[in-house]
Image (tube, rainbow over all chains, first blue to last red; front, side, top):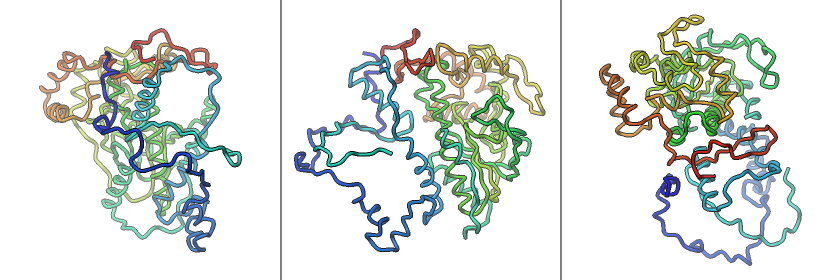
Length: 136
Length: 317
C-alpha cells in the first residue's frame, strides 16, 4: 500500500469519530418540503417583513454595512457570486473513476486551498420541483 | 482572479473613522486584521518611491508597455501566504502542481489585500491593493524593508526565516499613519554564499554559483531571467517551475525540531555550515511521492482536453 492510501489527510481526527447511518435527529425524508430561500430571516428583513429599520440595515447594494471590515468583506463576497458555476469541459479528464480515490482527491484539494474541514454526502433526491430554478 | 483585479482601489471615506491616530496602535491593528483574514506573515515599511513601477502592464494587452503609474502612498503593508509545506515536500519542483502552488498563495494574498485596502479606505485613508493580477509596485524590496526576509541566491527572490522562499506576497499601499518594521538579519547572506543548492538544482541553469553583483542599484545574486522564464513558461513536463523553492534548505515546516534548528542557524555560522551538509544527508529537496495528492494532467494541445502526461510518477490517476 502506498503512502497515499495509508495516510490521513484530515486536519482533525475525524477517523476516530463514531460513524452512524443517519444524523442523530430525525429527518423524515419523504415529508420534508422544499422551501424558498426568500423565506430566510435576512431575506424577510430586506423585504421589510420585520419593519422599516431592518430593511434599511440590510441594503442589498453590499456597500452599506454597519462595520467597515464587514463592508469590505461583503464587497468581496458579492464579487464572487458570479463565479459559482460554469460550463463543464466537453471531455472527461483521464482520471480514476473510483469514488474513494476521487473523494480523497477532492478533500485534499480543498485542504490545499486552505479549507479547515471537508465532508461529502449524497445530495438526496428531492421531490419534484414546483417551478424551474433559474441560475443567473 | 480576473474579477478581483478590478477591486484593488476605490475612494476613501469622506470622513475619518473615530479611531486613534497612534501609528504603533494602528500598525498593530492592521497586522491583526490581516492575520484575522488568514495572512501567514505581515510586515510594514515606508513605500520606497523606487519600488513603484514607472509603467504597469495591462493584463489584457501584455505586448504594450502599459500605462505610466502615479502612486504617492507613504506606507506599504506586505502580506505573505504559504504555498503549502505538504505539497512542497511532495512535488519535484517542476511538475504539474507547481503553478497551482504559486496561484494558491497569489489568490489568497490578493483576497486579503483587497479586503484590507477596502477596509482602510472605509476608515478614511487612501489605500490600494497590489497583487499578482494587478501590481503597481515591485514587491521584493518592500519585503526587505518590512522585515519579512533577506535577499537570497534565488535571483530576485526573498527568503523568509520561517517559510523560506515558499510564499507569495501581496501589498497594500496607504497613507494611513503606520509604525514601520525594521529589516532583518538572520544570517542568510552567509548561508546563501555557502549553500548554492538552488544554483546546483535549478533545471534551467538560471541561477549563479558566484557572488553578488550590483543591478540597478540593488546588490543581488544575478539570475538569467531568460533561462528562468523559458523553463517556467516553456516547461512541457510540468506547469511552471519552483525547484529553487523546493530545494532551498529554508523551505521547512514549522515544527519544534525545525524551530530549534532555525534558531541555531540564525545565530551561528558553524550551525549554518553543518545545516547545509545535513540538509543533503537527510534527503531534503527530493520529492516524497507518498504525500502526493494531485492528478498529473496536461492540456498539451491547448484545446481544453486534459491528457495523462507521460511522466506521471505515481498511480494516483
